[in-house]
Length: 112
Image (tube, rainbow, N blue to C red):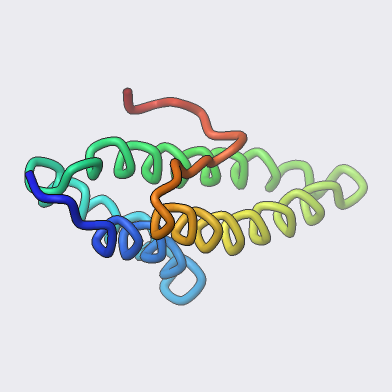
């Protein structure tokens, strides 16, 4: 296995494709994780973390949709999710480039 922090940074930043394509932020990290997990040191850990984060944000988004009808609380939740999905990949990519361990709070551990 080789150490490749740039590939890990790209994997974290590829989540931002959600803002452009809608689903690319899930597909691209998934493909990078599945193809590189045996070649790049740490890719398995980071890939699982990213996929769990993406699935968790999708679940939270689904929960917010019916809450839209309850005094508009769902809109606040969706705005919060959008901000989290914009900020956390950038912050964690910077952490990875500095050799630190990234953290995605509020993530449900689905893939172990």
